[in-house]
Image (cartoon, rainbow, N blue to C red; front, side):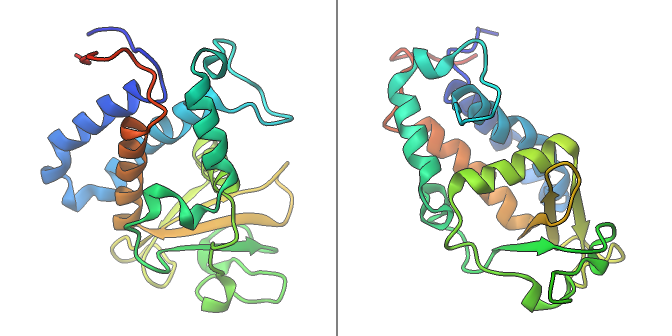
Length: 212
């Protein structure tokens, strides 16, 4: 296998090819496959290009080597999550955000500061005001520490998976940020993210490079 040209375009391209090979056979295992792919596909490009204050930067400094990609990355991260190009085909309301004020543990016991529980629709808010970078930090931290729950429609773990929940906090203190989406939407999302990276106008890989 040839070496990676970069981690923000070449790597997602190879991931997309693998997804294409398995997609027809994983429809009953979407959550498993998505969570297997997501940590590398969401985190690798982000960590190679981010230079946000207070965060460790990658010593290989891809953000210096690929300046156009870095510019596009910063512009994307500063924008609204729901306006991002890879969210164009997302179903309305398929992503929700909430804050866990008490009972961090089983999702059906989560409660916000007003006492609304996780199964209560009042617990969840839309994500129209959230920046891409904030959502990425939530997903990145959740995936890194495996703060993830899969639940049925009642936010329990009895029936078939309907929701994927990602939750994180700073220093394990309340409140915890929580993001909810469906398993089908999360799979669509990671594919759309990878496609966006490989088709981005910020491409700086060598023309004609063909990944093995």
